[in-house]
Image 1 (cartoon, rainbow, N blue to C red):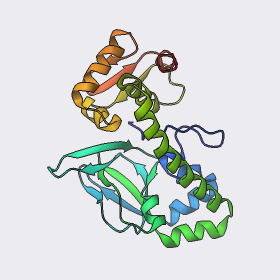
Image 2: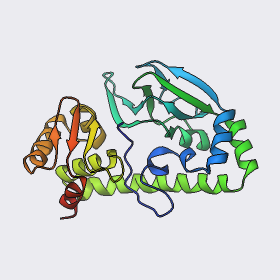
Image 3: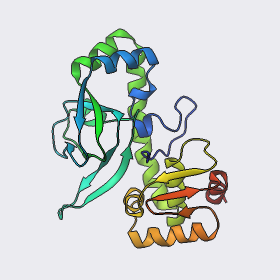
Image 4: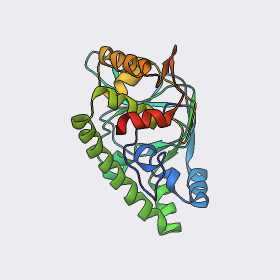
Length: 232
């Protein structure tokens, strides 16, 4: 599953948590279970719009199964993808908590089951355990930090390094032989480069033996070697 990018590391939050995945996954298991039990399940078919940029944020969403594309539609109707989120991740918290219009569009990338969490469900969780508010605040702080890190990465890293970093973020933690199901266009949109620039970067990494490009997927035989490529 293609995961949301995370450029922030922390001893309190693993690489697949709040900065990329929302705050629900960081909640203690018992509280998370109660929160989700009180939420309302909704099914979306592939291609169905979940939320639209400019909508009022009256809820946020937890992904029970399936996948969700996060991005923005351009004036010509093309969806520029920022991330593709999967089970265990949540989205929409910022607009919901800030009470401002949605900043992104969200579309079901496959048949998807979501859990809607609104004001009453969140307030009940906060009232049940003081840790919830602290985790929520930390999640929002990590999201802000992620935005700064993305800007910094765009300034200081080459296209090859940005692509390599994105692939590592999309790979399961500690995976040695990782296969990522992603098209080159999706990856280009995610990194924020043109399809041509992405192709050149992938060819360079492939020539160095760091990855193998397949049809609709990219295989990394040794993620540690790719990490060393960035650090060197």
